[in-house]
Length: 161
Image (cartoon, rainbow, N blue to C red; front, side):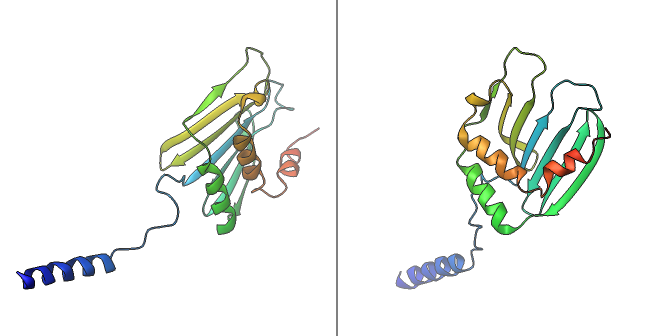
């Protein structure tokens, strides 16, 4: 009996010592964060919308005039920045929400947290309902935008007037 107990203990200790280390990031942590800005309904020469997609490796922006792509930029993501974004994303609770006014011509925003193809969090709103959006969401949106150096200049450089 003692031999059987010693053998079982040896097996347990061997199995535990060979268990791979898990990442310090939660399994519910996003692998991508997507921020989308949709400009108000104005004629094409004035309209600018953009999407920023951030992962542990890169931050990409796509600037559009409705469906026409005007500029794209990709930059490397630092591990430090990515961890900070994931930490901020971890503070968002629930599934998000939608906050839209009945006004026409407003700007639209959305923030999505993605795990593979699964959308784990989505909040979307228009410019008339920004006050309904949690400060943590707005702070994460600003942090995502800050991943693209000279974002404002990139958007302005696409204007032809």
